[in-house]
Structures are given as structure tokens and as C-alpha cells.
Length: 285
Ligand SMILES: C[S@@+](CC[C@H](N)C(=O)[O-])C[C@H]1O[C@@H](n2cnc3c(N)ncnc32)[C@H](O)[C@@H]1O
Image (cartoon, rainbow, N blue to C red; front, side, top):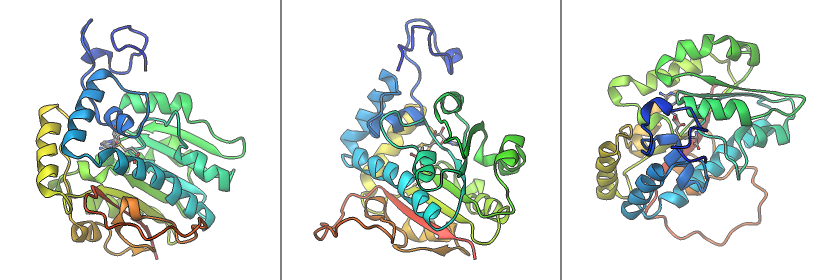
């Protein structure tokens, strides 16, 4: 990424004074953990601090990034050709982005990436390019305003909400406190799409390493990053009540594999003791 003090990168210029590093933010810290290069030293610093508390975080984020490709790819194989990816994050310079994974299966697939970080939106518009037969747009939107996302003309021009849509809420819902009614947000989104639509979700948990997760939470807050609301397996199941969770169920993100995975069977995996997030794919009846 360009030097934050150089003036060549302008998404969050108002936050910076000459000679100072940008304040850390969620998309860029996530980029650092996932092995990307789109972050500033301040993001790398906070990311490194969290690694000392949660040593599995880089592996967990990389597993989440695999899920971001693999779960939509699986849904494309099942015949879903429309994807609404909210909290899409920064484009992956070195990996496969969601639209690339689904358009490899369905070149005419239509994908809307949504984020409330102007930097992620600007980079998405520049870098997330559709296959010639499909369509990809990146829009500014906030999960706290579901109705605005659903009525955004770029969204309604790209997606036919009368046909099945995969709603992707990956590494996003844990930024919503219980008082913001995340199950209500999910219900509102899933009500807007027809039967046969799907949901993909990854969500932070403190089930495996409760003390370290609480410690990390304090560090996020001190750095000015949004609070992460860890939820238990049962609380995550409650978020998707009314939807049919597909195999392999709600599992640590490292353990999620599409049921149609044709890879050679792996030797038995050792027990996971330090999972930091769950993943699931669910379908609307
Ligand atoms: C941890 S990143 C996840 C990126 C990607 N979904 C993934 O799983 O790799 C979370 C993203 O959600 C965005 N975000 C956070 N709160 C949001 C909100 N209320 N509405 C839309 N996007 C939000 C952040 O800007 C960030 O890009």
C-alpha cells in the first residue's frame, strides 16, 4: 500500500495529519492477518499485538478467507447465481475474491459487494472486475441500514430479488451488539429474498479461548477498533433460527468444507483447541 503520508492514497485522508500514520481499521487489520499488503504500519502493529494474544488468528483468518471463496463456490454449484456480499472487505490482491470464485463456476453470476468503509468501496470499485458475461458492483452500504442496501439502485439493477440470492455475512455480524438486533438484520435480509436463497456466515467466538479473546477485545477497543461481540455456538445457531443449516453444520471455520469437496480425504485432523470463529451455510426453505 502507498505510504499513508505520501498523499497518493486518499480514502481516509481527513483522519491524517502529515507525518502521522493512519488510524488502524478493521478491513486493513484483516488484510494484514490474511497475508495481504493493503495496510499501514498502524494496522500491522495492532494486528501483531493481537497475534501475541491469539496466536491462531492468522490461520483462522486465512481459513475464513478460504470459506469466503469456497462456500459461495459451492452455492454456485447448487445453482445460485446471485450474491450479496455485505462487509466484503478489501479486495484480495494475492488470493481469489468471492466473485472470482463464483464466476469460475458460473461466468454469468452477479455479485454485489457492500462495505461501509470508503477505502474498501473505492478499492473494490477499482479492482473487483466482472467476467464479461456476469456483473460485479461494489457499493457503499451499512448492515445497520438493510432497507437502504436493498433499495440501492445499483443493487436492484444487478440482482433480481425474485430469484435466489446468497447473502454473505462473513466476519461481519460480530461487530453488531445484541442491542442492535443482529437476528433481526438477518431476518430482514432473508425475508427480501425467495425460497432457495442461502446465507453464508462466519462469526467470532470465545468458546475455545475465552480469556485471551477477552484480552484481545480490550486491545481492539484501546486501538479504536469496533467492539467484537464474541458469540457461542448456541448464540450463533439462534442467529440463523428458521433457516436450514447445510452440512457440515456450524463448525470451527478451519473445519468447514463443502459437502461436494472432492479433495483427497485428509488424515484425521487433530482436535482444534484454539478456534476463534465458526462458519456455516444455511438455506431458506
Ligand atoms: C473483518 S472484515 C471481513 C471481510 C470479508 N467479509 C471476509 O470475511 O474476509 C469486515 C468488513 O466489514 C466491514 N463492516 C464493518 N461494519 C460494517 C457495517 N455495519 N456495514 C457494512 N460493512 C461493515 C468492514 O469495513 C470490513 O471491511
